[in-house]
Length: 102
Length: 106
Image 1 (cartoon, rainbow over the protein chains, first blue to last red):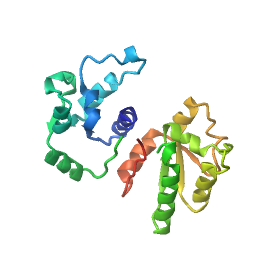
Image 2: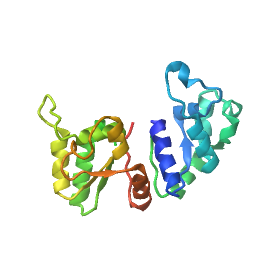
Image 3: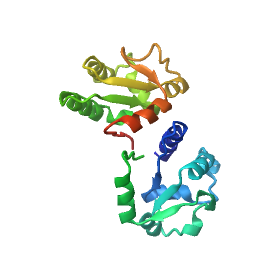
C-alpha cells in the first residue's frame, strides 16, 4: 500500500537515507492533482508526498500513465514528477541497492 | 511485513538461517498482531508459536512500538518472549545496512 511506502520513505529521509519513489501501474493515480480523499473518508497523503517530492523526487513509469489515458498535465505540478521509460526504470532499479514494493 | 504472509515469512526465515544467514524481521502496522502471544486461532495453530520457535533459533524480531501503541497492544507485555521494541528509524537503518531486504506487503 502506498501509504505504508510513504511512511517508510519519510523515516528513511529522517535517517539520512534518501530513497527514490517510483509510481507504477495504478500507483500513478496518487500523482493526480485536485484529489479530494476526504470526500471518501480517506486520509490525504498530499503533504507527505509533497515533502518527499521536494526532498527526494518522484518518478513514474510513462507506460502506466499512458495505459490509463492520463497525461502529465494531470499530475500535480508541485510533485515535479519525472516520467521514465521501462528501460530507465530498469536502470533505476539496478542503480539502487534495495527495492521495496508497496 | 503483514499478517497474510506469516507462514511464508516463517519458511523464508527458517531457510535463510539454515543457510547461515543472520535474519531480522521487522513487524510494522497490523503485522504486530502476529507477535501477540495470547492469541488462539480456531485451528489451534497460532503464528506466535511458529515465530517463537524462530526467535529461539536465532532470528531477531523487531516490532514497531508506535504501530503497537496505536492498536492498543502493550509492546512490553503482549508480545512473545524475545521480541524487541523498535522504530521506523531502526527499520530505515536496517534497509540501508542489510545485504538483502524482502518486503512482505500487498
